Image (cartoon, rainbow, N blue to C red; front, top):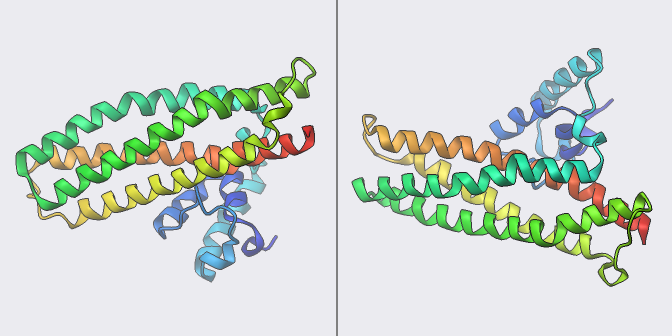
Length: 233
C-alpha cells in the first residue's frame, strides 16, 4: 500500500499513533483529514508512517475500534467521556489562566487569556450545537435504520449542514491552541514561575483531550453520519 495516496484521516483513524507524527510536523490531522498524505509529508515522514502501519498489519490491529462502533454508541461515548470532561475542565483552567495574568501581567499572559476565552466560547458553542441538535439527530437516524423510530423529513440533510458549521468551529479551536502553544514557548517568564508552567502543562493536556475529541467527530462520527443520512433519504 502506498501510504502517500491515503488521506490523513484514513491514516489516523486506522492507527492513532500516527497522530504523533502529524502533530510533530504541525499538520492539523483533526481538521484537514481530507488531504492526501503525500501533499503534506515528505518522503522521510511517509516512511515513518509506513513503519507504523507495518506493525499494525503484523498485529492485526489496523482498524480502530471506533470505526466499527454503532453511531449511537459512539455518540454516547463522546458525550460521557469527552463533553462532560471538557465542560468540567474549562472553569478550572480559566481560573489558572486568570491567576497567571493577575500575578505577572505579562503581554503573552494577556494574549493567552484572550485566546483561551475565544477558545472556550467556541468549544461551548460546538458542544451546544452537538448536544441540542446534531447528536439527537444522529441517534434518531440510528433508530430509523433499526426501524424503531422515524426521522422528521423536514430535517433532511440537516446533518451535513450542521457538521460543516461545527467543523469550521473545530478548526478555529485548533488554531487557538496553536497560538497559545507558541505564546507559552516564546514567553520570557522565569523558569521558577511554577504557576505559569503548571498552567501551560494543564493547557497541553486539555489540548490533547480536545484534539482527540475533534478527531473522533471530524474523521469518524461526522463522515459516517453523513453516509447514513444519504442512505436514509
